[in-house]
Image 1 (cartoon, helix red, strand yellow):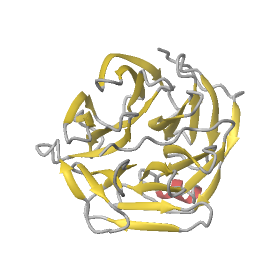
Image 2 (cartoon, rainbow, N blue to C red):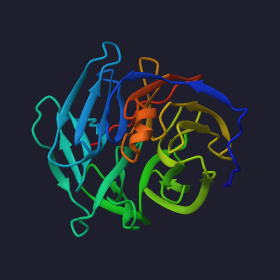
Image 3 (cartoon, one colour):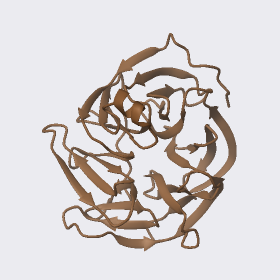
Length: 305
């Protein structure tokens, strides 16, 4: 557990470049498809799913009737599991149409929506919900199993982001974004349960709030800063910041490793929440960026269903 002071200005800065100029209202949900060698990412508020091919620069886009927030590929069937505003669903880009809903755990909370999510190594999809207005602490963390079971594991969040896991799979990291906190839980991989919740990192005042994150092959945690114009890299135990990727836009939302060698960090950003003056100063807000880093990531886990 740590409560760092202001960011160290002497840390190594990794440059980022814009790989896809876009006007995403709320870019999120980045995940690299090893099978397709393409990046899936979403624009939550525009209700778009994008699939970007970095080799050609081409993008395929699907539009839905409600917001889409997170994506994972399926292990035993074509297509994806996704979180829509109201629940977990299946969607096959090769077929198109509307997603097939599997479970809506918060039908009694119409002002909530799903946000970030990822699969664990056992093929279970973990995803968090949040208040659409980012104010009421009505969000929760859920685990959706391949057999259709859905379990709530924590609650009381206005905005959720993450999760990601330690390299050994024994720790799950999850963000209480509005409060600027990242919590670490002991993770029982066999049972898929959490315990011993602790504060792992409290972002310094003026450094934004924690958004999406991912883990590299060395176990380092890479964290997007909403309002902080960067992705920071941290030691998984001490939470000490090791380096950061600096971006020319303030609202940085998510990151995922991709490319043939998994050494490219793809980064999503957002336009929402910026004033007209800020948008004029940040013409690339909402675009997709990448950075070349010193070590590879790991392939995204697949959903077991």
